Structures are given as C-alpha cells and as structure tokens.
Image 1 (cartoon, helix red, strand yellow):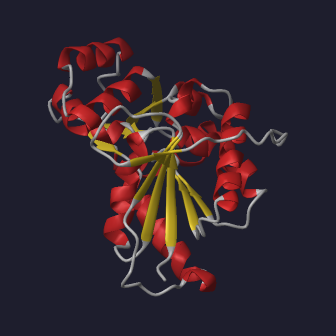
Image 2 (image 1 turned 135 degrees about the horizontal axis):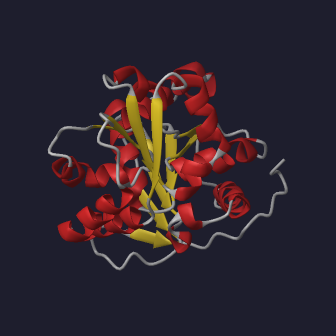
Length: 266
C-alpha cells in the first residue's frame, strides 16, 4: 500500500505545493483538503485557525483515513498553528513558511519583499525568519487578501481581471529597489505569470513549493513506518472541501469540520 499524504489549505492555493510533491513522489496516494468555508485564513484569528487544524486531525481519525503525513500548505496556518497541532497528533506534519532565507541569498540589491496575507505578515514566526536570515538586508512586508480571491477565481475559471490585479498591486506600492519578491501565500503562485508581467519580469518571484517537496521526501525516507512500497491499486486523488466550490473542474467530497477548541496559544 502506498504512503498516504494529505495536503491541506484554506482554499485551492495548496495545489501549487501538491503539484511539486506529486512530481517528487509520484507513487504516493494523495488527498487534498480545503477549508474553504473559512477562506481566506488570512482574515481569521490565530485561535480559530488552531481550532480548525485540530478539527482536521479529528476528522482524519474519525474517518479512519490512514493518513501517513500531513502537509499544511498554507503559510498563514503554518505560521499561526503548526506547533499547536503537532501537540495533539503523532502524524508527521510539514508546514510551509515564507522563503525568506533563499530570497535574502538571491537578492543582488539586498532589498527583498514578502507578499502574504495580513496574518502571515504580522506573525511572530515571520519576524523570527527575517531576524535569523535577513537581518543584514532590507525586507519590506506587503499584505493582501484580495489576491487570494483573485487566485481562486483564476484557478477555477481561467479568467482574470488584469485591471483588478494591477490595481491591487499598485495599492501595495512595492518598493522599486525590491529585486526578489517572496510569494508568502500558496495561492499567489497561481497568479505568478500575471504578477511577473506586472513587474515586466524585473522582479524574481520566489515560493516554497520545491523546498516543501524536498522536505516531504526527506521526512518519508527517515520514518521507517512511512517506507511503504508503491501499490498497483493506488486510489485517485481525493478532494475534500468544507463549502461548495461552485465548479465542475474538480470532483469534491463536501464535509463538515467540527471545531476542536484547543487552548494552546501560549
């Protein structure tokens, strides 16, 4: 039986990470879970996000899904709740964090930007990343919730209001000295091509997808219990959602998450 990897996000953005992992580990069985009833997570409180991720662990156990590894493919959820959720399960969990370190190493102007949701931008974890890996360069922080909804729309319809996108990017007033922009939300790589066009390809866009795939591969090889062999009867990718996606692009199983209140903020 193949190893079962579940990728989680508030919406469809985590599929950008899922694609990298699938390319790296093609023999695995995959599930994709989107908590789109609370989309976007960038507008939620830390405690709410913790409760929802704890509810996900409860759901996995209740439904006997036999998940071997969870990927929290959401920067906001990872920076807000990853340590809390690891306290309540033995399932290995891989989170996604903004690619501050590689961006700092790549920058020629020594001036980078982080584009993420408000929660990620304001998190103490993000501040720690900057302090540890980019304290000798300038880091500008930019937040947007609008880009999440634009990415969702673009994924499902392949239609994008470029004027609306450019208006949002204009409003962020990204510093002209920035030469590497970290896409600190897994939704944003969906918009990578139009964002790149906005900058006339003069700013390098960087996300964490490939790095997360490498981390998952390393983790699987280090856990004896996860060294399952490929199965000839591997199940197809199963999508779960907590709200209707109003699209025929994906076959989605609609489920309910019951909040598991965990007082683990401190």
